[in-house]
Image 1 (tube, rainbow, N blue to C red):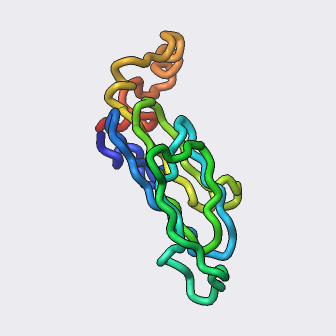
Image 2 (image 1 turned 60 degrees about the vertical axis):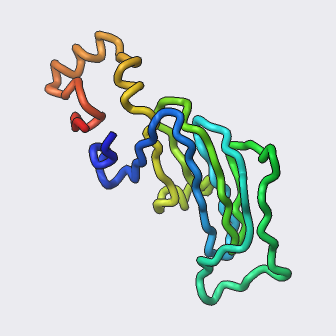
Length: 154
């Protein structure tokens, strides 16, 4: 359950099974950013004007109100974060896997507007196995068959 196992380049966050995750994502620029989460539909629980805005970028006029979700927040897997605004989203980590969360503008994802959620790795290790031919293939090449993709344990 140690995110260091996945290496610093992966920006991995390990999530426990059934944990409720809340993220606040600020867009301090003057461009909209469509963020997409694989493996889940999240609820949008709040959005409004960001307090992390970059000096020199004009603020929207009129300034947006902060809006809070009512009893049943909308669900989706992609949300455009308007310029100079933020969103708060929530999802339940109930789908074990490795899920990518990123800006849908590919150049932004490539520049680092992305992270990986490693969800319930303990459950994945107990319940998923590769075909035996894959193990044989790895062993013949000296590639570890335990741990993560780099052979690290944690």
